[in-house]
Length: 298
Ligand SMILES: Nc1ncnc2c1ncn2[C@@H]1O[C@H](COP(=O)(O)OP(=O)(O)OP(=O)(O)O)[C@@H](O)[C@H]1O
Ligand SMILES: [Mg+2]
Image (tube, rainbow, N blue to C red; front, side, top):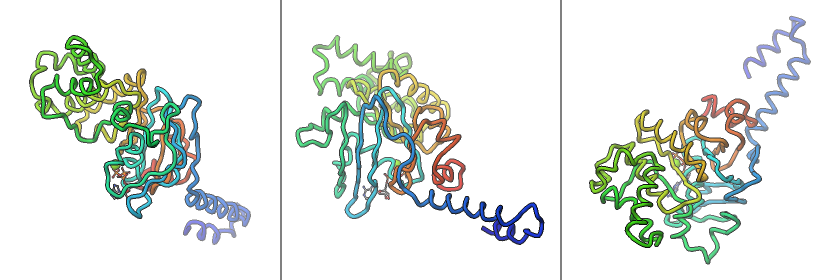
């Protein structure tokens, strides 16, 4: 604003006349309106939606953590959720497989569907839902069991294998898809917790894949990994897109730009903007998105 006042003082110089100042004030005013307007801008809807979220609100007791979010998640896309700490990224992600059900005082309203089925309908069984919409967490969390058992456990409880040979095949295929098979095939009976951090995270991804999900949710999956392990997981995410839909929360804008096709920017519980990743990072439409990606906020 100082610059505007200073500019106004320079109107003696004919190149900076009153019209210029008025226009500059109008630009400032538009930016403020955009900053205060919390209606989502961008492409919330896609033609081939795997999941649809409509008017989703989430409360933790009286804390309004997600505010009226409407968003589609497309088939075989990686969608990145970005935004400052506390803006509701994890909360929103957890709505997609009802992980918020496990949190006392958490209430979710609105509609979320997968392939046209309401996941909050009273007839929905959350156990198969959480296989269909799997989750990978920030910190790798292998079970305190062998590498083999880490992968075999899910298919066994979900009855996905008729016999040992089928189970072995699922274990091998899941580890292969997670890019880990070659590193572990000779040590399947060793504990999963004995692997390196990056290997553990790929083990957890393999465990998620083993129960044939459609959607994989990842909440900052690389934040505990070194750059080499991160690069491997990012490569893997790109390959997995062929078979799965992936929603990933990340604090790294570079990572969002590298792995996703769409990006959603959250701010204080509002979905501010969503669109093609390239557009979000090069030509954001909302002032708040621009403030965040240029490092002025967050
Ligand atoms: N279990 C909980 N109980 C009460 N409030 C919560 C709970 N979990 C999250 N919140 C609040 O909801 C809001 C959104 O939190 P959330 O963890 O979803 O943010 P986030 O964007 O994932 O943040 P970060 O980037 O730090 O992980 C915050 O204000 C947070 O304090
Ligand atoms: Mg979080």
